[in-house]
Length: 385
Image (cartoon, rainbow, N blue to C red; front, side):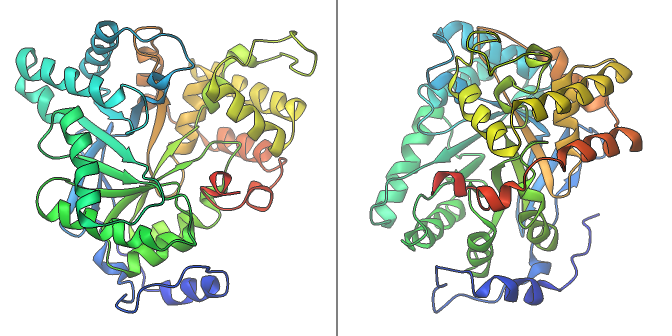
């Protein structure tokens, strides 16, 4: 059953009024928190969760295969090897793939992959596979025709009549065109071109405005890890009230949260593993903002003790911890298709149960880091500074 949402949003909303830089449209309506249904764990499979809003719903795997790594910078991707790898992930029960219009060939690979399943796979597998994509438009006028053609590009590339989920990103909040774009996306959903509308990298205030404008978003994809707990400070509260869920990325910090970087010293040049991918470089900057490499080593040592206790790896503990946070529906684990695989590790996440001592140990070291909400800002602000 969906949990009941207490009608306390007006008080929550008031706290943000003075901070908002964007004014809702004149026809915007007060958010009815009871109109958005919470996600529910599927009782028949703890891998799955349903994200929903009103009559819109989509079941996804709680650990998503992130395809940013197909965009370049992680090694050359061979098309056939990549599709074969996607089939292995799906066959192992990891059936949800996350991509974007700007992730190189990601959408095209999904199109080839889904057609392989249509031709060769059992019908029940086709029913379980989900392809989530993102649309990151330039700051131009969001007309109905422009939005429609942009979404049609993704539909053609992915070779699907309807996108399972379209996650929308907007660069500049001072331009209220994001509300126009979302209304047009909602129209396309009503036409059957999109099954669910979602967001990526929106902050708490803009999520509130979007919901008050009647846009039925089901989730917001944001950066969230043991190091970056910003989503739990403001965003999760609004999500808990409204039922909108979080899909997280950066949860293993590009691989920094792993045994590979345990007991290493990156302060000395060439002393540790190279930071040779865009994700490693990105999340090393987050480590620096949070507390530095020495503090991060204490965190890795703590996670290693917990991982050893449960017979799993550090990334498994890191993802499980975030999945257990309020409002989190799923977490991303990047896949380097055809280059390396971590199917066994990923599947271990579903059977791991952290106990109270584990959680307390992680919280103790996590809280010793800097408050990234004060350092960086709310969710997505790292892209708008």
